Length: 561
Image 1 (cartoon, rainbow, N blue to C red):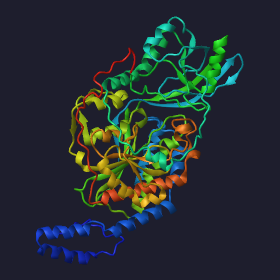
Image 2 (cartoon, one colour; image 1 turned 90 degrees about the vertical axis):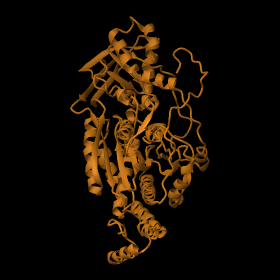
Image 3 (spheres, rainbow, N blue to C red; image 1 turned 120 degrees about the horizontal axis):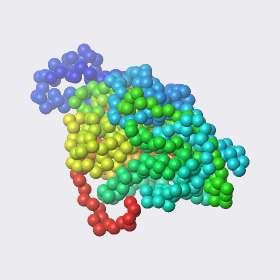
Image 4 (tube, rainbow, N blue to C red; image 1 turned 60 degrees about the horizontal axis):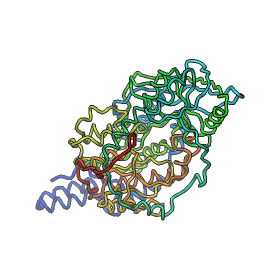
């Protein structure tokens, strides 16, 4: 039996290649079992070697971070990365180049079905009567422009469901329709910026009881088509445009829209107006006469390539039979800001973790794979595409379109695993802003907690040693969890992520926390290397099978989810 030629003796006091040759002959003279044990002891990093590797990772990550300049390139130079937009295409090429510079192997773009590209070039919205005011507003993603300046009187016509349409028939012709209830304001009463206390982290250490309600999922799928139904109704009634209200105060804008599929574009221009401006218009319309506004929305669709692309690279493992561990963050953003904390921060942390490992000479037993996901904001579509391509399929999944996949895919049975299913040993996701890592959610996989705690233990003094049983939702680990694979989301300090940055126009470089990001990338690199080298692997949960309905006696009111 010969020693594997890729056996790693980098930065150790282990045997030279000549002595390795002598050892291999000695092994051949020993009984097979003894030889295998000795070989394993040579190939597996010792505790001292592991400690040395972690120390090197901490030194490199903390003292020679490249995060600020890489974030500057991505956020200040490229900017917003709406899926399939020209900005995202530039970002995809940038990510491929960066992975190449870092020295990752097998760098590639993996395409999946998505739809149209879109970008906002400029917009200008004014109230012109009873007095001129420039309004804070933005076009809603994947809606058409105005083809010049559009002017009209506003009408407040709140609608949330198809059954609301009847109340406005015959009243909307020639009007700019404000479709949201204005409310009365939402002044904050708690600090926007916060870090987690130990008590708040401990509250997450609770096993969440699973609940299965397929009817609720079907209702959510129906809601996905509402935007197109609303657009069709407004067009039939002769409305000029649709106006939505920002769901945050503070002159914050989002511009989120989901009509991205080819052949499913709305016909009317649609804009989002800041909550304060929207309420002013609503008050004036209530007391009369209704104000007039002008809208000039200059946008364009890009249809040259309907595929979106995940960007993937890796550090090959020394044992091709050992499988791989993986880390990912979503690369796409919305279009109003630069996508800094959501999720440029996670993306540059993934690249920095890869750089740290390459710079410190890591040669892991298992391959370490890095992914920058696309289409996350439209329903985790990039990570779902990876699952479908490499890991598992569900019956009837080809009949599910991308716009409803987030809700529909979970309710398809049975699950059929692919040959690569068993190769993925662990997946770690980052997607909750630029706050430092405080630990990890075990996602209800209680048996995995000891290993997760072991891998985080070197970083306890950095505040990252917590492991909680609780689960999270809405990030790119979800579809891995739902096919029984060990996928995890880190615990992060929230800072002002949810309070004012998530999906907004002020999500720019200035709101990043470089020190937190250094810690994030360093912890991630250390966890990846340990999970790639550990003789143990994370326990898997059973392959899910169709659950029974949690409440078989549930009644609902008509129209109730």
